[in-house]
Length: 234
Image 1 (tube, helix red, strand yellow):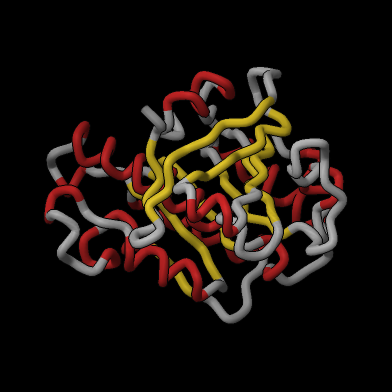
Image 2 (tube, rainbow, N blue to C red):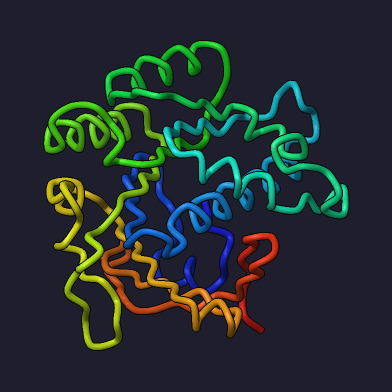
């Protein structure tokens, strides 16, 4: 599976089966926007490769965050010229499940039930700090679920507001808020650090702190503030 962004895929080698991917960053730095754009890219691939809707594999999205719904409503649907509300125009994402409380065990049970009925290609969780349970054990359960199902699992995680910053202003992976174990065991760690100036310049920087390819570095995407749509820079 690809992230759907050329430079990011070249640096990381894409998303591998059974991989645990963590998208981290301070509040309002673009974590959810990145995760949902990756999801939307995969959905477009599904629609292209599986024209029969009855046979389309699903993306399972678990969230306790209202921000995800707001972003989902803004992502334009290419097939409808962006005129429809996004939750309607993205049928794959209708598998979105909103919870007030959520545990790793609940997610695992729900995923196993879905797999009995239909193929899944991706699990997205927003966000780690909202999950009930001891953080270290929760992280291990999510990692085990990815390995046992062979499905890539993307987890959004907050970092501390007063996080120490690297030379280029990118948060360091070791400073995940209440999620040190998650940062330790993740196969890939992507850090978002978009600020107001980046938004003015329509930039979206991503730090690849760890990847399955062994490579790290910074990728910059184009950002449309009106729709939260990300795209490759020309």
